[in-house]
Image (cartoon, rainbow, N blue to C red; front, side, top):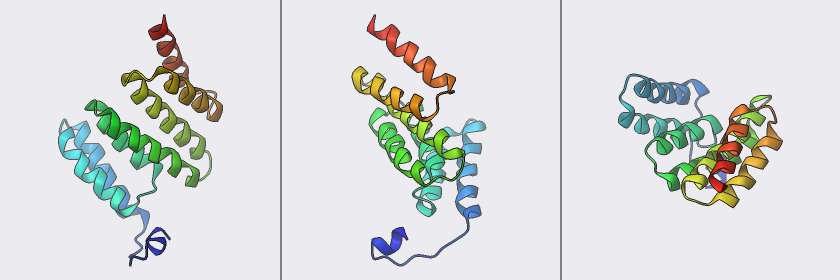
Length: 143
């Protein structure tokens, strides 16, 4: 559908292809070869550009490199993509994306925006301890 809206030709593959690329990137991080992982995350997203999980993981990759602008952009895109996530994972992915956006904003010193994002994340998934921890951290920065 995305290709059609962009007036491009496309081939539809099942999810296993994009998942394989994503998992290779994830495995590279686990074996201490994180710099190589971005290539595989990008390949996965080339096949599944609206996959909230893949976008959030690439955001985490940028976050680990303290590239706050790229991390924020990936988490923001993940937030949008989360709307297309099915079932119980939808609230998790949306909350995770908002939390990632907030983290980037905290690191950029944009505390008011971070606070609003964390409040949205908490509304989406009120039982996420990580959101509450980030809110406490944000509160400590303001004291």
